[in-house]
Image (cartoon, rainbow, N blue to C red; front, side, top):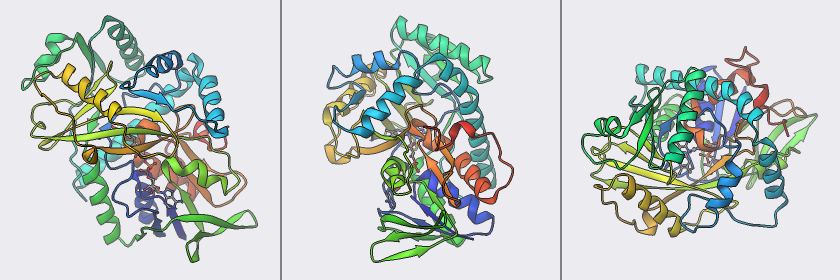
Length: 413
Ligand SMILES: Cc1cc2nc3c(=O)[nH]c(=O)nc-3n(C[C@H](O)[C@H](O)[C@H](O)COP(=O)(O)OP(=O)(O)OC[C@H]3O[C@@H](n4cnc5c(N)ncnc54)[C@H](O)[C@@H]3O)c2cc1C
């Protein structure tokens, strides 16, 4: 079949990987030059530990508190937008214990599937992507956060995800090269990390040599639909005919899928990252600094620090106050790193595609026979990329699915 994949982020590329392997003629289309999507500058963490969706009890109260400070890690820009109001209402409705309980096995299973696939790539050595299995540290400085994290660790252990509550000394023992200023932490020993820039660049190179075609700087503007099938995608100056189409356009998916008659609640969650040269050897285990909601990931000679969730539409501007919040967080948790404020032009920003219930959208559009959606992965898109690509290829092939995905349907709202 002739398959068009819209979006060359992690989900588009892994969909291309598995579909090409099935012998299809695959074209990946992206409006940008493909060098800077959300999939490039993220924190690089592969997180089977993240089994609790963003929509969870307590998140709304926490979010409202955070919104009062200009350096805080979370912000919703107030806007008169029907899409934002709908998204907010659905988030509110889903932030329940019952939703968390239902989501845990789904997030666990898709995450573990994805990690296994990454391990296969690592073994096969088709391309380098800076893979390391050192776990993930959730670090905290306050008794309130210690309590919350101990509860999270208990839930994870119950779900079969290994979590160890560590004292301050035990955390420090894991980090012999720099001081860690914490009350304690939780080590999720099954998590991993990689270098996303390397992964995307090398995966694209590999796909190219395998015959996948790339159309960059080509925005998909619309779709031509006949008899419940998308016949072609409309681009500037023409159309591209196809048998199947996969929509994997990240934070832009809500807008683009409207043209397919689909209402896909989705908001861009802007985050920032920066690379600090010479600090890659200082931090051994990737970490989330919980009170600061900032992350630290060693990538070769560099330490990548990331954070912030700003629900602000499709807006890629850099707010240096939020960046300051990340820098302050890093210096508070790792006081010997003496991280400096970066220049604005060196700060990377990306838009996480956030669904209102914290679960991705993977599946068919019910009123069209040849459209598959792969988006809405929020904070976990890098982690879930290989599993998403595999599931997409199974959906298109009408093959048995690697896991049940009813709860991930793009038709669920
Ligand atoms: C600061 C930060 C840290 C993060 N850390 C992690 C982490 O540690 N681990 C993890 O698992 N996840 C992490 N994430 C989340 C992860 O990066 C995203 O979930 C993931 O990259 C989304 O990938 P995607 O392929 O769905 O979308 P994208 O990477 O955004 O790709 C979508 C592509 O679609 C293209 N496009 C849009 N509209 C059109 C159109 N009309 N026509 C053609 N092309 C179009 C865009 O140009 C873009 O290239 C982080 C995100 C941020 C911001």
